[in-house]
Length: 127
Image (cartoon, rainbow, N blue to C red):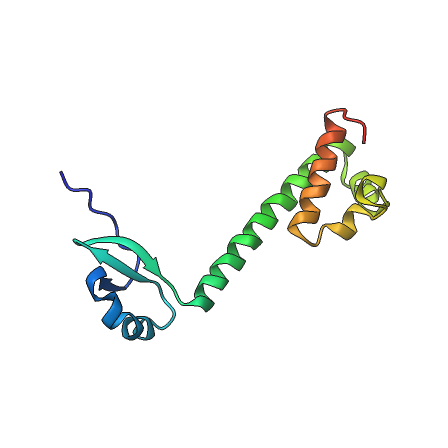
């Protein structure tokens, strides 16, 4: 029984040719991933550093959108309507070192702090 894996790259290189040909294949890939193959199966992918950084940025942005939506939904659950939620977001909070939730939401860590704070409030934990 064959466990053939799908190849997600247009360019490939055999694992035995990495040392002699990787630079050439990577340059020829024009920023796209290169599948490193062994026995006809991709075993890993090589991507240029700029491409990898762009992938990480896209993942981070997606995670931040999801976390922002979670915070928003928790806020609406707790405050009941958009106006009350927006008003709370602008007020300074001792649990956020005197900063407003809105002011710390620019980073993933800040969003997580607001999410944790809202979670505690929703579940009746004194903050």
